Length: 411
Ligand SMILES: Cc1cc2nc3c(=O)[nH]c(=O)nc-3n(C[C@H](O)[C@H](O)[C@H](O)COP(=O)(O)OP(=O)(O)OC[C@H]3O[C@@H](n4cnc5c(N)ncnc54)[C@H](O)[C@@H]3O)c2cc1C
Image (cartoon, rainbow, N blue to C red; front, side, top):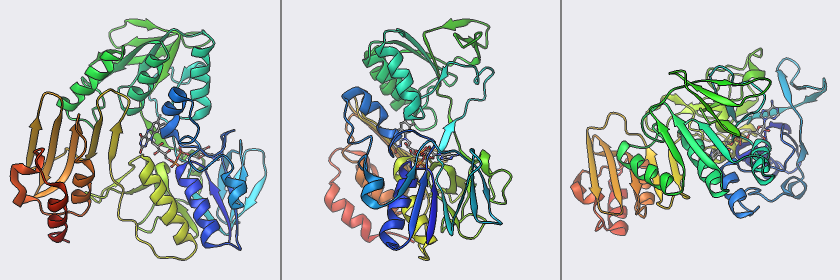
């Protein structure tokens, strides 16, 4: 098959690799807007903190040559012509395909006045991250304002603080990472941030990015103006689907896919942050924009494009914070539990969210050793009623409980 893959992020490069492996006589063209070799955005902070390349270029910088993938960088797709089976590029060229993988990921979503002003930075791509860190290294930036108290804002604040920048996070919701952390675990994250020198202004609404000709301040809803050398938007992400709007490929928030990761057009699959898949737990359509989902989807989408019939079980929600001084892991959901078990010590906290005797979510801080077991029990929909409160206690016997619970998996 002559396959084209739009995107070389974790989903795209996994799809390209799978296509090469499972169809050695076919060809793969992989397109990316980036000037870099395929990289993992999840490892950018680590890369700039440690100088390490291995996790950033997680498949190796030579992945395309090694696997025989025709990789084209700084190549922007502006449309898909499904009548002629061609991808349309910004320079006017077209690339024919027999099978197409859409893996164009996500971009910054900043529904705020002035978000398109020159100088508004983000931490979504390596190109932008290099610009941001470069300004700090060149001594041009000593202060930073990050609008958004979600995962990316928190991770970036830690990087900037470590680089010696005086950094403040502005967040509308009153605690950090409000979409994934319960308030008590978020409080531990906030403590970690403050200890690292990050300033928090939470429960504060930013209404606009302001400045002329380029941004130099953030205006708050009460009219107050805050200025800084670096003004950064970390207000959320949105699937990269704009170039598909005029095509018959169905999109909503992301690209609509079924449980085989097929789009509404035969011969076209989608994977990663761009794909709106079923949530593993609720079955509702959602984009859980995390690395493991992108990789699994890339593999399944590519195999199915070649004729396999693999079912995608659904995307999971899982977040971990490693650089706070206290490890934190959050998985699943905190919505609509019928029971919540907590265990608290001076240095650690665990919460397990249950519905109908099954784990629907878990949050751990300080001691995260049980995270893998909770995740397995949750994904296998094991009935954990018999463990009672023991489920959250440190004496929880991971190995035996794990195997007992697996034996009681319900469909
Ligand atoms: C700062 C940060 C930290 C993160 N930390 C974690 C973490 O700790 N754990 C975790 O699980 N996840 C984390 N994530 C999320 C994770 O990185 C994403 O879920 C993952 O990168 C998604 O992979 P993807 O291939 O779908 O998309 P992306 O990585 O976004 O790649 C998209 C690709 O599509 C290309 N592209 C886009 N539009 C076009 C176009 N029009 N034409 C051609 N090419 C195009 C891009 O150039 C790029 O190659 C983090 C993300 C960020 C930004």
